[in-house]
Length: 280
Image 1 (cartoon, rainbow, N blue to C red):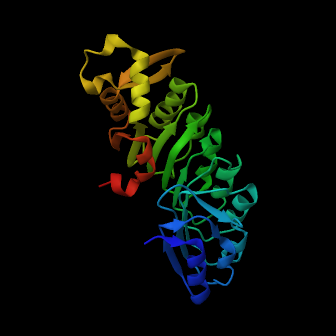
Image 2 (spheres, rainbow, N blue to C red):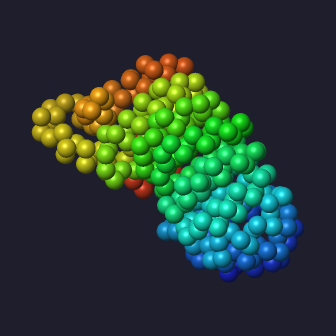
């Protein structure tokens, strides 16, 4: 059942010894000051079923949990400011973190995460990343990374160099411009620097594929449906248009020991893609 922010705070007030809270259908807004009496919380998962969950008060009311919190999931939330990311950097016991809206995250986000010594899994949604991804190579225990609806900026590919700690990777890019170059950053970066991966999953949306099919034009119309799905990638200052099956074969050629999947889904389903499910 859906739970209003007020009702959730009433539950917190009655259960100050709470250690685990999973509230997947929280109605916005939620005043986070309700967490101040909770001293032993180890796992916190907040999300809403429709739209975004606004956290009134940000994460400051949770900063007293630095010595207890091991799992933090704030999917579908928005409105986190730079000071909130600073507080995340104090949760030194964190083993898993999921952040649902990283649009306003500072460029130092990956450095902040790399300083969390116990981190094993990271999921980030709706942000952007460049060579700062390389900061995560410091995280010896980090083995799983999910980047969902992320803009891939120049330098991302080289930033993957030395990230031998990562074993499972899911990337679903979002695009603004330089589509072919963004794709090259991902594909060439992964196939060059992350050949050791146990699994690599690359996702694109049906809406984006439809837009790309208009780019390649009528000359492709007689091809099989799978071959008409166009994935532009730059190579030697030229743009190559390859099909999704061709993309899959290319990645597998460079990563023969990895489980590889090229995924397609609706734009509304990107947030439903998880490595745990894809590994099955």
